[in-house]
Length: 128
Image (cartoon, rainbow, N blue to C red; front, side, top):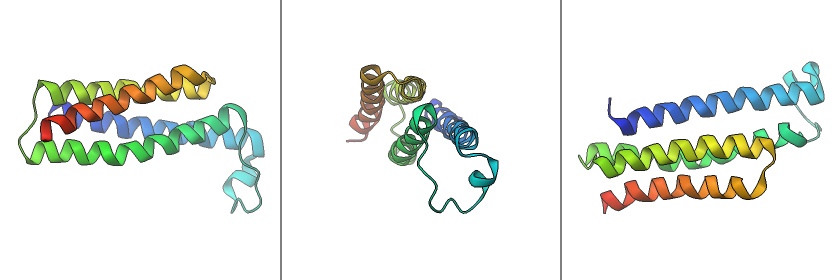
């Protein structure tokens, strides 16, 4: 497995873990019956649970683009040290983003997000 595909798999695992963290926060705030119900009229989660949900959604948005870039690099046989480093930067940036977002650290969160974008840009650069 290439480094890029390993980072894609690891990012999917991160998305799964964030889904579990988000669900745990919802259960703790709204209670189990409300969390497993239809959630109609359920207030949005607040605090760390709300931030976990937003971090999860943000990762899913980026994960689609990252997957396209990794798959394109593979299919076009453009994998290189640059794409591998870009994939690693993406994953570590997204992990840092999730941790600091849930922790409520605003400016560091933006820097971590920007790092993940740079990682994707590195892969894109190799494709063009």
